[in-house]
Image (cartoon, rainbow, N blue to C red; front, side, top):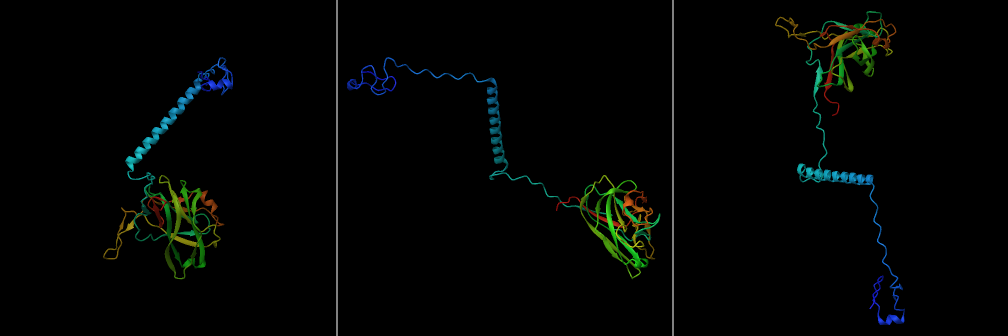
Length: 304
């Protein structure tokens, strides 16, 4: 019995009636002429750079797998019972405040500094308080000053002023202002005398504790009458002690409410009431501890 080497058909006696004994009745090949198919040629050698590339890819995949396994293990250890670890959240900023002067001042100097809308040389047309913020609370959010009006201001019953904030450039405000308040209208007085505070909200301005700044007031450049006047009293280099039994004050020269502060006055000629020259000429600067009646509020962070 013959078996076809190609299709595996086992020849029977009845197949002789279909095809001769030399051929397969199913696939028709001749048994003697059949040859096995040639073996598939083996692939040529892999180029060296391909081998290196394959090794590099395997290394990257192995490193990625190790990282995933370690991350999953760390999440399981550090955050048990949680599907995903919580995102890191920065601790909230605990708000701190400070003021200048640090302690409220008792009383004021008897002298005040008249600020005019315009004037000749030696007339004050701008006055300011030089200061530096505490390094722990460098964000300024409020500034104000005490003003005084007397009967001679009745000629200008409704004039305006502005507060400006600049870096202190040694003997004058720096040319670029950091903040300028909206104009504030000040009515005159018919009572002969009045004193009050004017405060402005500052849009949380972060200052550099290593620098000095000046907050300064002027009536110039606001369309005021040229004879408009307002007064800012001096804070004084010392406190006044409580009244003695005989009604006398006992000044204590060893204490100062604001020892690092200084007042500065712009005394240059300004006949037209122009604010632009005030950063181009030197100001008159007084000794440390001799301050104008300013007050400022600071905090440590602007986000709250």
